[in-house]
Image 1 (cartoon, one colour):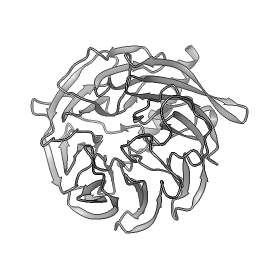
Image 2: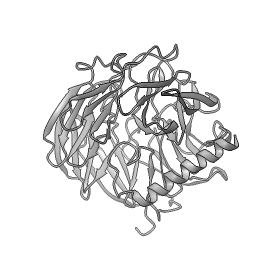
Image 3: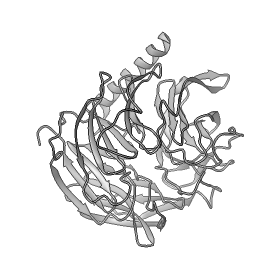
Length: 428
């Protein structure tokens, strides 16, 4: 346990040091520059008044959707359904005015309709996945289509259940990584400029838990056990794939449920943390060299009563994991990353929000966005549950699921057709 704690401490210090020295004032993809949902913003309000922070500006015309936001170089990028069609959209970051919108494919017409993918911006190009599995590359400046592939038609892709493709693509070097979910093409790497296939990953039997196919998560990068790899949550659990050639490395099935595996895994050093809802639970995995490959062993398991994250995710601050516990609940919780011990919160912790909570962090603060449209500000500290204010997002008529973004002293909230931007800097 002492060695586990020291290794994790080193990885956290390294991660924080890198964020403080190399971070750019941008949020170019799902969950930010490092896909860890950690904003490097500082000087933020430590307490909200009774009405919440001041609204800086708002925009409308985004369409129906649960996509979050990518923000970079004076533009905001998201996706939305307009009638029978689904679009990638670019807005001016100062006014919210629509700069361009480009069709991806048909809209997602059901009770929880609308796109889920957040565009990934990589310089002059950007990438997004439509709900029918259309992977599209566009010119960032103009929205002009450069190339497209179909995860279902080109790679035999399939989802584990009915809510369609939801992944936000990963760009890594000269490649874009996506998850068709097929047995012979579970993950694929494509040339980011042309869409030409570089490699595909075939997977063996991944275990009895869950269901075959892609899930509702997005790929993250790990260098665990000294091997660069892509970690993804599938319908059958978590897997690791060697980044250089797509070789399948390891899998962990116990965390899979049969309905929907959603939250993006958390990686730190040689460790991977993953959780799903539907009364399943959570696991910390340790990666180690195994011959020419990598093995993943369970460091600890938390049952569904102790911690399960339906969706909304979790973040790592210092050596503690913070997120919302419970199936379609967001009970605030703090977990010691090393031991899995619940430090505070969980089942009995209540606040003004109801439903699942999408969580991001900045400046040792937690921003919890609840399904009912309640925004909570909570201090990220192991010393106890310390709420610092809340407000209601106006105009909420469907589940308020889009993940919040904190950037440039602002809190950005996508609410279906609207974008609301709040001043959260102490100087505002």
